[in-house]
Length: 130
Image (tube, rainbow, N blue to C red; front, side):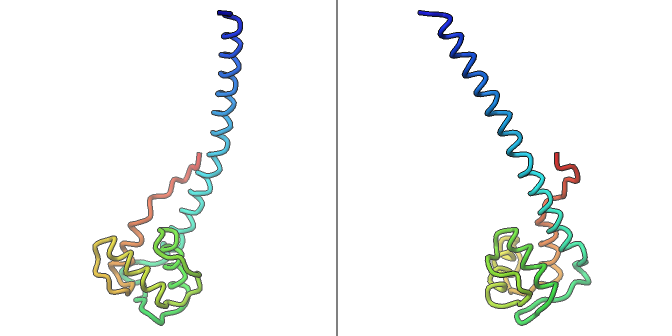
């Protein structure tokens, strides 16, 4: 067997692997920063509501608190509708599914325990994205 042939192939494969690995690092870095930025936005949506003083949301509620809950439920994967600030049947079903996942009573209302569970379900924010 020709050792030069195997050496050149090994060298070429090593270079390809090194380039692929370094390219993967550059590709994955913005994803982490983007995920961290999204996490900051979600935390920001809930930080203005103290669970004890947050509004009770029920069907037919409207406004910014409903939009914030919809956005958090969408980020968590429970809600797939429009973030329109209208607490309708789709939002109610998403709240019930979230409540049951947290072992809360699935009544479809966002009260003190549900506000707290929403806040607790978001992982802490890493301020340094890299």
